[in-house]
Image (cartoon, rainbow, N blue to C red; front, side, top):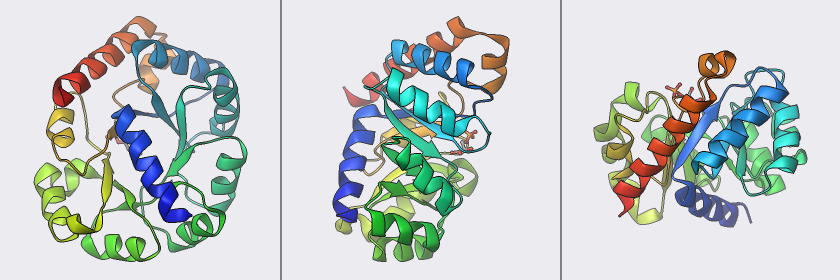
Length: 219
Ligand code: 3PG
């Protein structure tokens, strides 16, 4: 059940291709942001548990934007894991590999993807059933060259990745060119300072540019 969910999630994330990683200070601007990003053509978003508003935004966004593949990010404990899925999140991710959280996700059949940074972490998570991994912090770890080297000995097992951390419009295409990378994530779409300033047109423009970029990589 857990492994099947992992593959299904990887497929859904591949359809989306680019995942805005959102840090939202309040529900109203969070919902407005989801609306703008969806209008720009993005089909998924990660709402991070870095702010108090996160659970409320997940709940409301799920109702208002049923077509958005909505995930919870920065899930650092099992309370947030349970809460995110209770509120309707379709997937959840974390920056690191915490066996307690993965164990709980396995038990519940939740589509949870831990972050890995090394082959050792990958192997431990893989053994628990993880097939869809976050790779974090992607650029600082060594970028595309690093993930290609990590993937090589595990490719035959069927592993899928979402790099985040330093991924931007400038390098997203390089990441997306790697077949095992189903999508990239980043905070460059819907940045907190742009949201705060109400730069909705700019956010929408950035979103459209991201979709064009995706189309050009996948043509
Ligand atoms: C994450 O949670 O995935 C990262 O904080 C995103 O990193 P970025 O801010 O460099 O895009």
